[in-house]
Length: 325
Image (cartoon, helix red, strand yellow):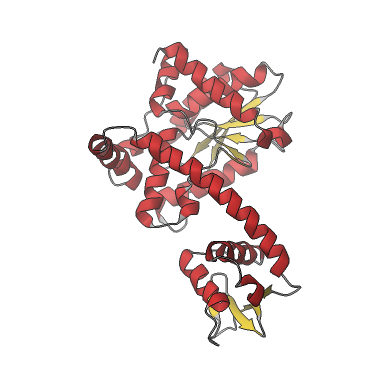
């Protein structure tokens, strides 16, 4: 692809997302671009500045320094400098502390998203540089872990406050765009560290699949994500209607809910439990909860994260706080 076409493709992707009906509530507010200094986020920042400034809008740069590697402060400063040269209307470097369960990748992601949410402009979207390649890796991870359709549906282009204009753009296109614009992307050593699952998917699994299936695997996985997102939206709309019909003042009418298909029942249960304060709802939790609806045999309650117990009483599903032991 000629470099000029790469730049144009990324600008078009940004323009298309910002002009979508779903983005209408955020028009007029400043945009923020999360930038690591890598090719994807630098190319995205350049395109966002180009598009927004021609519309009289603002773009702010947000650089998160995780402090996980030696010299991370210098990397963050270099990214901030390039954002300033691109014409961002203010650039901020945010230092975070990476702690918590789930491994370094998960902890870094939580810290990064929390910082971006806190520092984003009021009512503004935060543009993230995830590409089609990232989407393919996400879908493949979901398939391998048996995480269900919501996970296999991957990342959404617009999931406020997050916006991902490049989910239809290949990673190689962002590299070409940076080259054309004279930008110097940072090469994160973690992106070649085989200790990380995503790196092995990227460098070993996906190339093998491309060879065996004769190409087009990344595009096919991203296409699968789009199709599943449409299905998820339709099922979520049905579940919302059913929930409004079965929700009582204190719980859910189990008899009425049992008349719905399993996929709808579990969506109703998931949304209702999360709204009531349950901190995490896994597939195993949902299936156990669903047995209180569709396979009721007088069984006892089911324990849920956050110190809750879901139980059935006189045809109604109720959520209560677990008694201390």
